[in-house]
Length: 348
Image 1 (cartoon, rainbow, N blue to C red):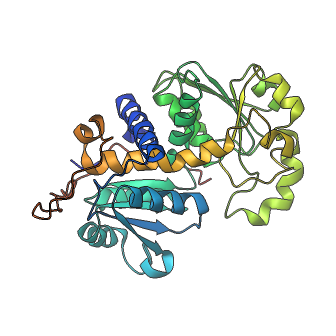
Image 2 (cartoon, rainbow, N blue to C red):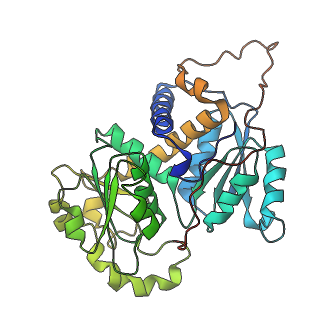
């Protein structure tokens, strides 16, 4: 049965725990020089309607380090939903590749692609959600000893797709997510209302950055104007100025609280230079872990649960030329995607 990752609704806590264990093992293998070839002859399609440094490179490197390859496709080549129906694109790609990653504006497009494709579809970002980012962030916090069932996350800034995915994470983790944002820039109210009802965590929307930061384990921020909102930038700057992570806000958090940013950062706007480069910042380990976590997703989705739970530290035996390199392809059956979230009124 093929699996998708369009939102946190497609995952169970056991799924995430397994992904974290696989990511930790693959990361350790990479640092120890142990190679992996499990995805030999497998191909990942990378569909980009929005450019990105981290999303493209992390997925390409992840696939390469597992022995596979990737094919980069832009809107110019594909014309999905305009030149050709999403359903047709999904069926064609399912015949060529073993998995699809899409980074796009419209969340419904990613959801429809997952519905029609017979291979796994991974949401690399939409205007509504950014699940791969938050999974990597959670993995990073776990690496740094944070209890993911008791932590307080203070998200300070625009209630965008990253904030929405933090709130979605309360489905699976006992987090308290506090979003401090100006009026009119809140995260999806439906997600906020569902938090605490559909899982062990809870979410709150606040107006005060200081109140959100009080006693927090993690301070988190993002740019004040995301890609596609450039025309609003000058209008947003004065509105968001009180929502900067700086020395005074950091003093409100717990001693030793971690500082995170999904990047790219506008230093001096949403975060000051000294905090970004300070000892409590884990921003660049967080960025590196995008690749390790995405590698775990590809490993798990394309090889199945049994493969990811085994010990993969030894280099696969590939020295015998008689042995066929190809293996049966998994996830090729057509079928509906995993449970998907209701359509958002808000495309942030």
